[in-house]
Length: 241
Ligand code: UDP
Image (cartoon, rainbow, N blue to C red; front, side, top):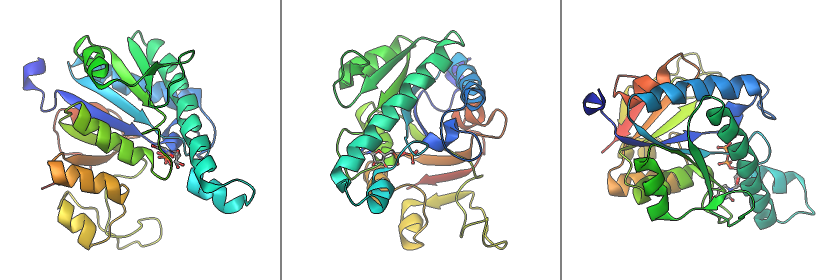
């Protein structure tokens, strides 16, 4: 019964690492099909889903330019955007293998490979029940796909940004280094900024804060967590006004 759904339209941000094996590099069929299975379940409940895929399993611009003096930072960011396109194409086939209808829409026009992102067309796909996979971030260097997730959420009027991570939510400190780190159930945008919590990049937080779009940070590895998140169940850390 889709009328009981808490969220009717969501942006699901998947980091590049979520498509990789535990080392965090490359693309793993097993990881992708586990995610695709969850997305299929969430979609079956009637939710419209736009996926923003990162590229960190292949290349992150800032990191890469830091260790390769020959490549300018802006160039490296464009390389990172192409990495998100590679991941988006893989994710598309993983979803279609489950019988879902999808479209990849790229912020950078590449008409042999994907549609170009056009806001009204994106919304049309969603209302027709297609899952859209948004590739190439915003098409601009010096930002990340977190910013793209927030920006696209505003553009398509999504109810929430679902940030799927490998940890259970937002902690007071790095839980892998500090055993006393506590997991927050909910936070305000102001808390995130004042406590300097590392949730998403600052631009993404600022966009969501200004427009009141909540962010849910949760562990996609826990079985059924994506559908639970979409149903508005208590999962991970909720960030809102
Ligand atoms: N990127 C960019 N503009 C965008 C989105 C991404 O320049 O709008 C580049 C940036 O270098 C980034 C890389 O693409 O580091 C991969 O994306 P991201 O780091 O967000 O991937 P994730 O960490 O989510 O896997």
